Image (cartoon, rainbow, N blue to C red; front, side, top):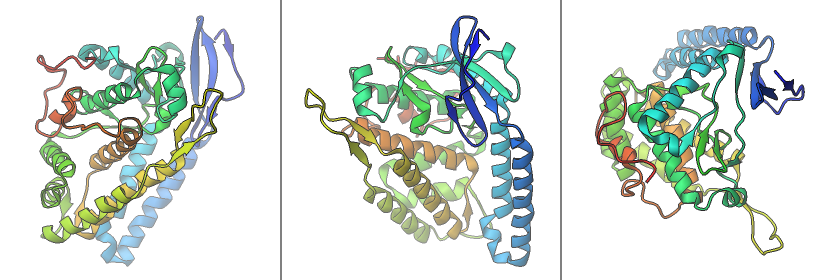
Length: 352
């Protein structure tokens, strides 16, 4: 490195990020904290034992599949610790953007494999603003709605045609760049939709958008695992309550004091937004479990990202109809087909 800032730019529970210069380029160095892997394995091991013990002493808890939940959690968290996997995800996502033509509107950091490893990831530093900071966003892009469309189109296209989709699109992982592109950051958590549940996932997406709760209940039953017959009417009623509760929650926008020109800044309250998204997701999982259905992890990941984008849409493009807008062809396709791997030959130009 030409230089390395010892003071972290950012820090989280498992890693911290330092600014550096590598071969004349601004980069960031993501470093896993010492001892995190051993500590996490020990904690997850305890949870595994505890979940099995609970199911043994209280068989009625078996319908919640606690041991399976802990196993899924262990797999995803340990994957997030392996930066070699994240590097591979970045490389694949960049290649996919080029293949589909989406590189004109979206990007992700370029990783440097020669100076990266399982505990260290070096990648380009991207400078931009959060998509939820309206005041800063307007200073960077002329049309925030178009930026949102590009972000949503890129993400939904990745669900359809990429090997994986970004599974953690909270506002800290989406940046608006000065050149008008949207940048996706942090590929430690990704999701994949198996072929055997794709049809049910597509049906669930279409039903949710149409607010067709009986159809949604059937799709979720078909997607998940159940030990007995499911009361679809009761399940549909519980799902309606979840959606009604979500509709009742308003996006929290924080307004700043007017500047010299009389303009008022606005940002989305991220903490409230993240909590709301998580609570809605948990309510959906609870509704399924209470009706004897265990939903696959992939569905939860998809729903959480959809809820994030729902919030961004309310802030940046409240009047958009995501199913009718011609700029979102992949989102419509997601509700009615399982695509081949790679971009479709007749896919419309996503940058238009």
